[in-house]
Length: 431
Image: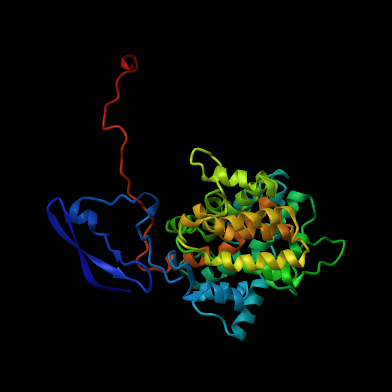
């Protein structure tokens, strides 16, 4: 990062200089931290469309190029050559592991997959039909009541232990939320399985017989984890950072991130996509719904197309598309009703002039929802899967903030537009 030039702003006739900061990639940034002191003014940027909230070395997105980098590595290469835990190691440590480091890291994670046995009682406090994300917010937040032996946030080893615990226990927590919802017994983790295969064992296995993971399906879910591991300063990541800036423990911060991710405009997008497909129902109705999607006066929205960040294409969608075809072929679902419907929508979006001009291409949520449904994961669990994967990115971003010498508690400014100062009058004099 360099600050070799200044930006000169003229405010109310006063000329003020501010340093311009240049990063490795992306737009240069004007450092306006002294704006208030120098001019008495603040900036207004609803939704933070033009504001960098932090310096980060973790993830970079170029929306115009359709590029996503984890620690400088293209997501396409990572998805092809690395499993999810290798990517988790990369995000946390900045470099890909060698063979010894990979084995040590995988062993460490396996040794942390069990939950404190008393935590299983938490689940019985929820209704059986509670949304799994509601359960996750509560259970993850409660982890600090059981694992408070490593909550010195200034201690690097304590932060390391918290990272390992959260990454290891999220699959167990997610699988238990699913089992509780379906009324099946909880399945204990198996250390002889890989991270993703173990998760599938805890999700789909029963005590009646040994669960044997299908390698094609394991690879598909592992790819979903990798593609969702981090995504720059999105809403949930910013939530984790903001919560963490107060010194809150990491379990509370991740619980806050899960709550934010639950929003339909964020992590709930692939769930909304499947619900849309169910609403359309059949290939014969695609034309009708495409017409509705083009009609600005119609409330119907085509979910799973376009992206706020990626202006041309989502690089994760290309990877997910191949995984989608592999899974459906493996399971013999090429003629599945929803899949045929989804493929017809995909064809129209890639050929119809309206969608081409507006760059409403299929995004990662469009395909990942189809894949998860094919794997037997219910729609209500989609965002839980997202949270499981994103915990790696959240914890990486949280630690980066905690070790940043410039970090301060988050305190956004506001443009107050309410009533002007006024005095309270006696009750009998009020209108």
